[in-house]
Each structure stands twice: as C-alpha cells, then as structure tokens.
Image (cartoon, helix red, strand yellow):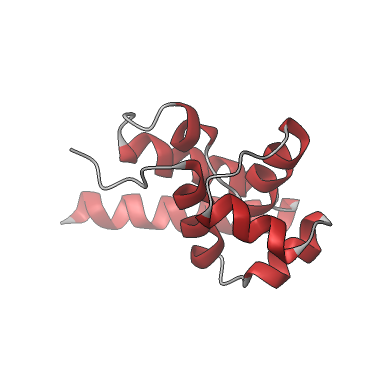
Length: 110
C-alpha cells in the first residue's frame, strides 16, 4: 500500500509544501487568488484543465500522482528526477552526469 495523498487537493497541498511555498506564493506564481488555491486544497474544488496544467508544471507534480495514484512511488520519483533534468542548463547536466557516475563507481567498489 502506498502512502499517497487521497484527493487532488491533498496532492496539490503536499507538492506545495514540499516546494516550500505558501498558498499566497503559489497563487501568485500561477496568477490566481489565494482563496482559489485554498478551495482546491481544502474544499474539493476541481481546477480547470489550464489551472491543473499550471499546477502540475509549477509544482513539478507527476501527473501519475493524480491520474494513477496506485502507481509505484519509485516510478514517480524517477519521473520527477527526469522532469527536473529537463530544466537544467548544459553545465548543470554535466554536473549531474558526473555525480551519477561517481555514485555508481563508488557503489561498484563496495
């Protein structure tokens, strides 16, 4: 059994908190009212498609958390890492690759 949030509002709230954002900060980022975010998180209001898209992108949420909550958490974490990599510049990607190689080399030595 997975320890995943039960509702869309729970998913949004957990992702917002994970990103260290207040409802006011998130509302400002996606250009809606703080009250609107509150209603999604706590009152079960469903966002429009465009707002859901903005929330997923801004909070770096795996759509699988919303549409396939039963999916294995490991897959979700891997997909999150991949999405983060898409936001890296070339230099950052080189650092990530070098770090991953060093971690793998270290693990093989043990």
